Length: 452
Image 1 (cartoon, rainbow, N blue to C red):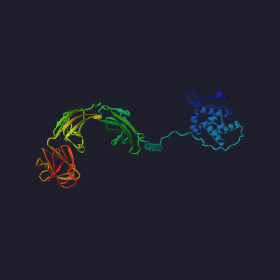
Image 2 (cartoon, rainbow, N blue to C red; image 1 turned 180 degrees about the horizontal axis):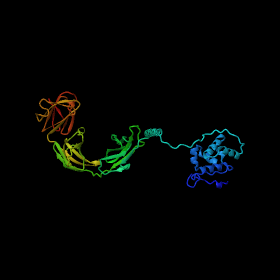
Image 3 (cartoon, rainbow, N blue to C red; image 1 turned 120 degrees about the vertical axis):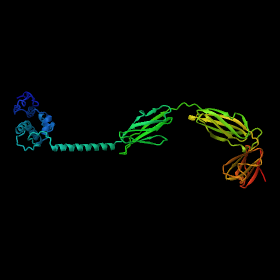
Image 4 (cartoon, rainbow, N blue to C red; image 1 turned 45 degrees about the horizontal axis):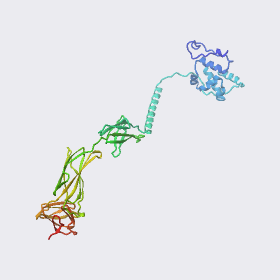
């Protein structure tokens, strides 16, 4: 019988010999062993995949036997065992099949002692579900769940927490002018700890919710506000792989310089001894300051170089809500320049000056206590000054007292070396070189004179 007569029969079905209840037609024994095997498998209606599963012989060896590629089989007794088991599985006579295989290979017929890898006896039992199988399945499912949980935990502990900033949506953001705060939002691990850092500010820390969502409000200043956001998983101690840097810019407003108007004093004003009023108005200013510098002696005044009054440094002037300001300044005799400065935002400022001349009428004596506290008793034009009283008064170091009269001021001091005087803008220094008591008479245009 030729190869044409051994047509593939395929799986049992309509029209097959197995379906009609007939025995499968097999090729005659004289046909090649490989062809007989192929014909028997096709007559059985199985494919190589199923044959592999049911015989436990690898598919590559089954295919090699069906091609007659015997050199691809394991040598010796294993090749015979595979052929014998395959023949039994296909319903062929295993002894006759082995003998034919031996003849094809030119072997002398012998009765080999075959060690069968696994004898095929009865067909496999159908799948039966029993209590033992159910228990085994439940145990397997529990084991899978435990292993999955452990794997999840190991993965969680081995990976850093995620960190995403969702608002602002971009790394560099510009907000409206005048914005003073912004709400940062994002996500990380559930209950993760998020830290927001900004140069020159305290760190902000916020805990994410159970869904990993976090939010915090940051203060904004005009210009560039730079924030660095990090996250940590409190259960593992791991930090996010890379921090997220956010830049929020608040535009600077175009700020004009403050306006300034001085209503008092008038420029070139000449005044007698006393406080000089300084007042005016300003707009767009946040502060007002005033200073004064000595220019020279007043007309007809003669002052020694060492008696030059010191400049008065800038001092703050109270500024009302409507932009008005008013104060006064005490100047000694001479020519002075008064400077008023109104300062606004972004370093903008406006400055005005006024020249004034102070010409004393009568006598003004300024007494300053230095180095040690000192007792003083002063009379003005022959009358005890109420500032010291009849019993005198002790003044602390650094204290300055002013006395004004028509013609003469008399000073009784407990320590001459600590009592410094200035008469009508002219400084005469200490009343003496020793820390002894002394009495001195002071008159306009004259140095202090010791009195008995």
